[in-house]
View 1 (tube, rainbow, N blue to C red):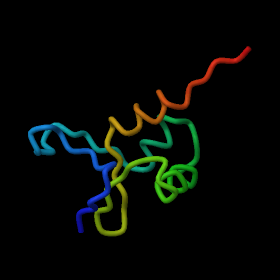
View 2 (view 1 turned 135 degrees about the vertical axis):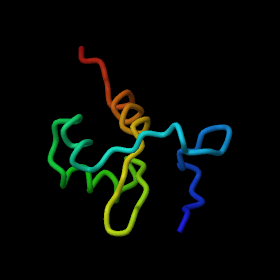
View 3 (view 1 turned 90 degrees about the vertical axis):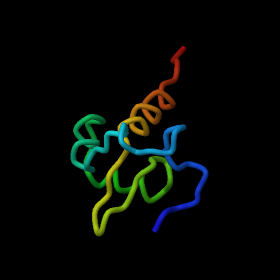
View 4 (view 1 turned 60 degrees about the vertical axis):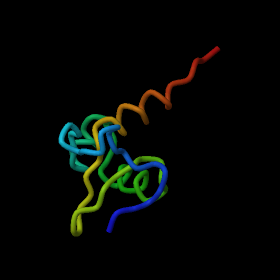
Length: 75
C-alpha cells in the first residue's frame, strides 16, 4: 500500500505522529478552489496525498509547500 516515491512525507524520525492530514474539502477551502481542482492536483502529482480506502488525505505541509512554490512576481 505504501508508495516508495521520493515525494513521500515522512518525518526524519520515521513516525507520522506529528503530521496533520487534511481532507480534500479542507484543502479546497484553504486554497479557495473546488474539490475537483484538488483531486486533479493529487492525480497529476502536483500535490502529495495518502489514500485511505476511497478517500485521500493531504499532509498540511504539502499544502503549504505547494502554495509557497506557486508564488511569482509580476512586473
